[in-house]
Structure formats: C-alpha cells, structure tokens
Image (tube, rainbow over all chains, first blue to last red; front, side, top):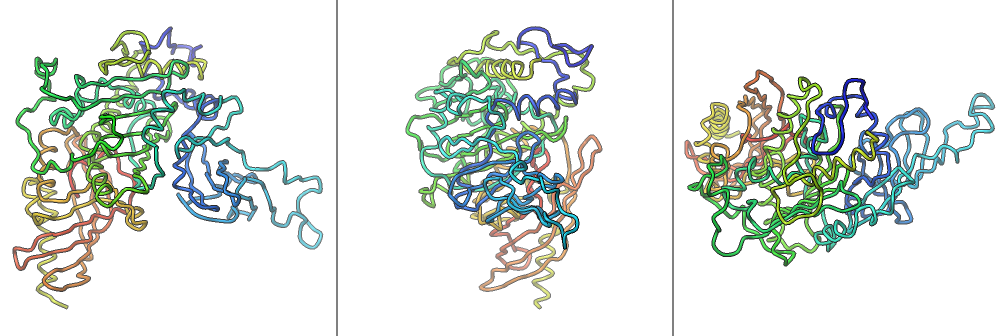
Length: 411
Length: 156
C-alpha cells in the first residue's frame, strides 16, 4: 500500500525507498503501528530502578514514558502524561518518589499509574469541582506491560504483542543472556544527536558489511575484519532482530580480500603509542570479541571487547534522532576491570575510535533524501534472503528489519 | 592571591586553547605529563560519580593516539573550534600542584559554514611543574551538555 499517490515501494526488501526518511505520514504511522504496536520497546536497565520508589524517564518512539519500581517492588511503566491536561509528570531522568504529582494542578498518581487524587475534586465550599459521576478509576495513566530479560527492561503498549521471550526468539534471548549474566551497574550516560532519521541509524547497526570499511581504526588494528571468524544471527520469525559477532583470529593472518585490494581502510604502518586502550579480557570465555545485538525496533546491546552498553535511538522529528547510550559493567567488577571498561569506552560513542563515523554517515544519507524522489537503496549484499549465516559480507539483517517493518506498517 | 601563579595558569590555558583552535593538534599532548589523565564527561556523570564519559586518556601516549587517529584513521567533515575561556580560578595549591578550574564555551564551525555552540562547561585541572614548564597532570572536561551533536573528533 502506498502512503503517497506517487511514492510506492514495490515488492520485496532488496530495494528501500528514501522517502521513508523524510515523510511525515510515515513517521505518524510508525508511532501507532510500530512503537505503540505489537513490539517490545527497550525502556531502561533494571539497575536504574533498584529500589522501591525509584523511577526513570524515557520515550517509546515519541511517547514519554515513566519506568518505576512501585512500593511493593514490582516494575511498572506508564505514559508520562497527566490524564488531566497532558502535562509531563516527571521531567528528571531519574528520581525516587512515593507518588507522582502533576505540577500543573496537583493531580496525583501512585507508582502503579492509578489516579489517586484530584485536587478540589469536590470543589471549594460546595462550589465547582468535578461532576459527581467523575470516576478516578477511569483515568489511570496509560500502562505498558513490562518484561525483563537479564536485567534489560522492555515494555509494550499493545496487548497483541507476543510474550517477550517469544518476541525475541531463543537465539536472541541466548545472546542477551550471554552478556547479561550477572547483576549490572551503570557506568555512564551520554546522548548523541544524530543528523538523520532514526531508521538510518538502525540500518547502520544492522549492517555488518560497513564495519571494517567505514571504521578504519578497526581495520588498521585488526580488531575486526570481515575475514575474522564470525557471522550473523537473524530470528526466523521476528526477522527485525539480529546479532552480528566476530571472534579473535587465531594463528597467522590468511591472505584475505582486504590484503588483495587497496582499501582506504588499510594502513599497515599505523601503530598505537599506548595500546593499553585495547587491553581486554575474554570475560565471557568464548573468544567472541564483538557482539552487536539489535531488537526491533530501536534497541542495541553492545559488547565490544569489554565495553558494554545499551543504546536506543529515538526519533526527534523526521530528520533527526537521539542516540541514548548507557554504559555498564557488573556489580562484582573489581577496580581493574572497571578501568578496563573505562579505557575501552574510547572505542565507542560520539568520540569513539570505531564509531564516530556512524554519526557522519547517517547525515550523509539524510542529506541526499530530499532530492531522491522515488529512488531506492540497493540492499542485495549476501543475496535476497534474511537467514543466519557465517559471513558478515551481507546485508541480510537489513532485509530482515525491513521485512518486519513492512509487515507492521502494512506498507 | 599568588598573582604569578594566576598569570601562569591563565597563560597555560590560553596556549592550550589556541593550540587546539589553530589546529596544531600534534602539539596538544605536550601540554600534559607522561602519566596524565584527560577525560571528557558530562556534568550528570560527574555529579553522580559515573566514571564513563565521552573520552578518556590515561597517558600522554593515548593523547598522541587520539591525534594520529584523527589524522590517519577517523573520518569526519572538516571543522574547527573556537574556544572562549573565562573565570580562571586557582582553587588550591600544595606541594607544587595547582588545582584550578575555568569555564569554557566552544563554537564549532563546519566547512559548510554551519556554526553552532557545540559544548559548554568547565575544566577541572591539576597542574604540575613551574613557570613555562607547567603541564596538566589531570584535565577533566565537564560538559554542561550531556548531548553531543553528531560526533566529537577534535579534543576540547
């Protein structure tokens, strides 16, 4: 189905139209059909709301959301919008409270999202007030179901979403639990303003093909090359999730396509003055040095050596987005391990040796969109399918993503 | 107030920001001691004692690597900074170590002509040495903004 008379997609997912990145109708439908549709959205880490009364604020697409641990210890999530006149209820990123009260007219809610108090409900001195039939029970905050995998909290507005583990599929669950095996602690936050539509960043995350080509630091120091053992995993049912991973290449470097071609990425004589930035340990005991995992629509779990982080990319209108980074380690990390994670954090983020280009390249795509008309991206690396495979010279995760996107958007 | 120290700390900071703004980045590591610590983080992380920020270096070698990566490996659009530094305040001095802080604003100008207030915050510095040989043993760049636009390639 076309959203515009003159903008159509055609069949399949090896072509992706650029108008997806600057069309207001697309964005409106995404909010309803994707973010508030039958998907599970990343909310925050459980470690961010450890105690009763703790809350964190976030967004599901563009909908503001509060995640709270209620006074009974259960984790709740509900819309951060007063049921009365729509004011934002909590405006800090984190806090602790026994109840939530709106600053506008002091309507109050408990941490389960129930409306518990309406100021002057019975009026003042018998005058004014709400009509007698006004029922506070009908004006609770819009709730999300909350699910928890290994301390990562997800939420859904939809009662049509499958159970969280079923939504993720066993392989994705396994790969999340591979990292989230012990209680975590947050090590730092920052945001990165991206000059592009949120989906352009998700394409970037799901694109194992670009990693060694755009990020030349990676290649130069042989942290990650496509010839290293590794591959991608795509859930067969919910194709919008993926894992890309690679392992240390043991033994002599085999002659590779990299060595045969003059790629910009090759700089043989480049050496670090202080390579301790790359010092790490095989903390998961399986030799996997890089695992990038995404959950549809906009969540990423990152393990790059010992730099662990969760990220979510939030739409900010059509042509901008906000990439929210939360670095973490484990509660039982010793000081040396924490310092290792701190040093390796140089690899990622807006100043990351192997990630700063992701901010640029999304903007490069976005800048060509207004003039692109009905033209389309070519997404054929690795063929037409979207199956798991033991190569990263593929765009299969993008095709899987767009397949799920098209199904949900009915587009 | 130790006027000489004040003047020297201000002079060091002036040379430091001009070095960056003039794109003489190969000279930038020389403002630091061999075993320095340099970091860029947000006020939010700083105030909550969260140790991971935007960038960190634990040696002058890592600072040199930052610059060689900028020159050789990383891809970013041509851009320049203009630092404005003010309110340089020596907060302590003992055993030849000066602690100081100063405010800064950085305007980033892109090759396209786009110009924005990129970062604002304070430097928390620990300075060793004397006279013209003063160096940063520690420089913590605390950003008021926790959001970085697109990327942070050139140091602050």
